[in-house]
Structure formats: C-alpha cells, structure tokens
Image (cartoon, rainbow, N blue to C red; front, side, top):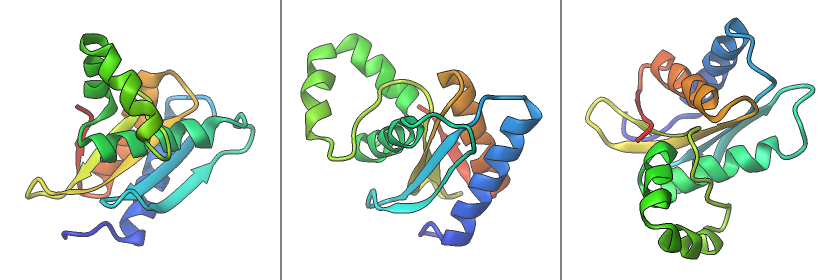
Length: 143
C-alpha cells in the first residue's frame, strides 16, 4: 500500500478509540490526514471539549508537514525554540509540538499520512494513535 485508504483511516480511528476506552482515557478527538496533509477521516467523541479537534488537527498537520512525529517535534522545540515559534504561524492547520501526532508509514517506510489525537494526556494520546495505526497493519512513527 502506498496511499492511505479511507478504510485504513477508519480502522485506525476505531482501534484507537477501542484502545482508549480499554484504558479509560478521557474523550478523544482524532484527525487523520493523508501524505498531502488533506483531511482523510475524523472522529470527535461525545463529551469531548470544543478544542479537541483543533488540537488533534494541529498534531496531525504538524507531524506530516514537518516530516516527524510530534514527540520528536517536542524535542526540536526544546532545542530550537525560535525555529518552532517561527514555523508555527506558517503551518496552515497548526503545529502542536507535544506527543499525539504520529506519522503513518507502510511496511516499506513510506509516509502515508499522520494521525493526531487529543483529549487525554499527550502521552496517552500518542499511545492511542500508535495502537490504531498498528491495528490497521501499518507502522507508527511517533518520533
């Protein structure tokens, strides 16, 4: 597979939510973008706060546009804060340098897209995204 299908994106969301429910995470917002950064699929759980989808979108968008999971982007922000501060307004859909934005790769390492998850702690958001990607038979790259 060298493109992210809608079926795969929906599997990622379903599995990420199932994982989050099994761990009793707070309600999540999940955004999936393709390799171009275009919205592929999304889900915002009931009782999720209003900003969840925006934060999730910024995580997914930041990961795909910077070519790295947002955990790595967080390290970049710590090492080069002026760079990330300058890049943030350039990112059309946002840039969120905290865990929860995970690149989606195929088995050959090609980037197919990214998932952004928001609603619980950033570490838990990332775990849900990884679980969803792996359940869809793809490779998660959190950075």
